[in-house]
Image (cartoon, rainbow, N blue to C red):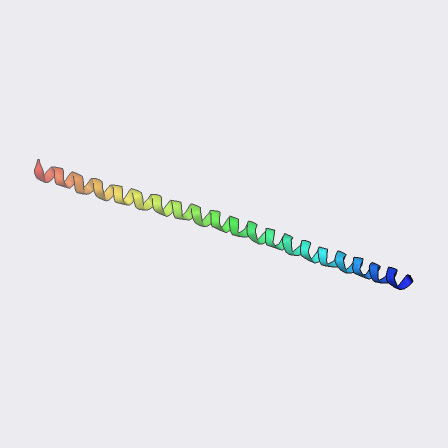
Amino acid sequence: MREIEDRLHNIESQMADQLNVIKTMILNIEDKLAQQDSQYRRANRKLHGVVAELSESVQACTNLQFSGFLSINL
């Protein structure tokens, strides 16, 4: 009977250790996901900034071409 109790105790200890390892793995994954989310948000903001700058440049070029067209044809 004592042997069975010892085995059960060992199994319980092993399970607790394994659950702690799994918990640590999950916490590490959560940290990595948070870091990736932060990197994604920074990259997205930079991308939006570049797109806005390009849009402004295209608009400025279009306005120059249009105003040049008007001055030539007027």
